[in-house]
Image (cartoon, rainbow, N blue to C red; front, side):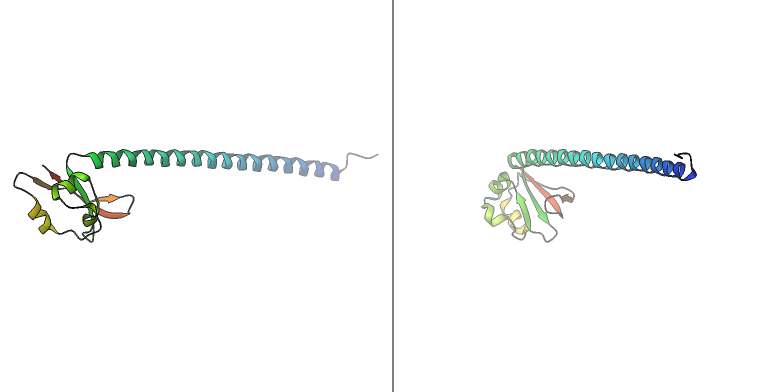
Length: 137
C-alpha cells in the first residue's frame, strides 16, 4: 500500500484548511449571535427605562402645582394638566385638540397670575414640535 503520494498530502492539506475555515466561520457566527442577543437585551432595558421615565413625567405633569399645557405648530393644545383646567375653569374636552386662543387666556387670567412661555421642545410621543406654557397662581 502506498500512502505517501502527492495526492494524499494535498487532500490532507485541503481538509485541514477546510476545518480551519469551518472553525473560523463558526466563531464569527457565534460572535454575531451573542452580539445580537446583547443588543436585544440592552434595547429592552432602554424601552423599560423610557416607560418608567414617561410614567414619572406623567405623574409630575399631572400633579404639578402650576398649570401646564403643550401646543403644537398648528397652535392646537395637545396636553394639559388638571391645574391648568382649574385655572382656566374649562373642561378637558374643550381644551384638548382645540385651537389655542390667547384671548381666552387673557380673559381667564387674573392680575395675580404670571404667564411664562418655555422654549419649544420636542414631544417624543407625538414626534412634533411643541411648546410648553406654564401658568402660576
